[in-house]
Image (tube, rainbow, N blue to C red; front, top):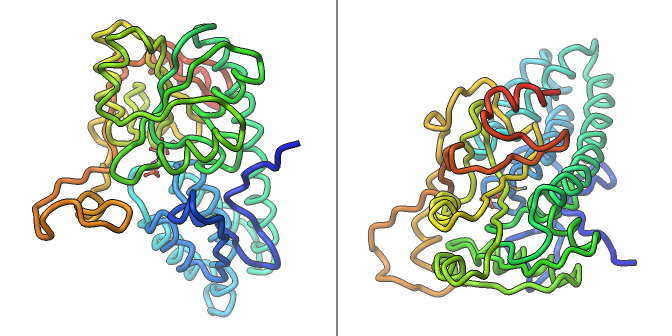
Length: 343
Ligand code: MRU
């Protein structure tokens, strides 16, 4: 049996993160013993993907309470650490969602020691629940997608982006397990190359055949009949179904609409921000200029060229054929459909 990819582990009171900056060349786990290093690891994309950074933050709160327990007011110290962690990356709602849940749980305890035990148990439960939810999402997704044909995906939404298994890539895994006759196309996903480095690595490990394509090939692939559905993940879905995901997702949705190809989003309900009415309010992270100027350690542009590097974009709900969750597939109108699925 194939060894499962587990990007987040807890061992000997330390948080272990598979360093995704070094994949596919090296498989190295970083050992983190304090919450600030965990927050920095999220900012630096040692770990990335909305569910994975939520789970990491849940464990980071366990590390935070070790420091907070030394303070006279441990709850205030923990709340301060929570604020720092929340600022690690702005777009994925799973980060704030996991931190808020942990803070509320901790503050309901009468001592720091009791809070630590509860937080650790909750972090383990969140990780296990994420994997189970992804597997359920996979089964719903297989039923929603066409039985045959080309499936295009973007970024990395697999085991590496979650606790394990994956969201959009989880649907692809479930499809292959169910014997679907799919040809998988993976966008390389510039500038960080989540598709080329991470999705390609995962699919190869899984033994799932696929082709890697440059992002700019998507329109051509659709126009020449190679793609019958697009499936992507999400970092934050507004209550009306507008979905923020990796930069380039919106372009894919517009292309899919033009070519009359169904465009699906797969995400757990923890990615739905029910407090946000529409996608225009989603904060889009702008990342460092050198991510665009350089590639694989090589300078690609004149050194000081001005750069625009939004890490995400928002796809309007009107372009989405269905939002695949662990409790079923939401279809338009999304405000009502998502509210019905809300746990
Ligand atoms: O910048 P990243 O790599 O964290 O962006 C990840 C994505 O955009 C994913 O598609 C999204 O988080 C869903 S992961 C299951």
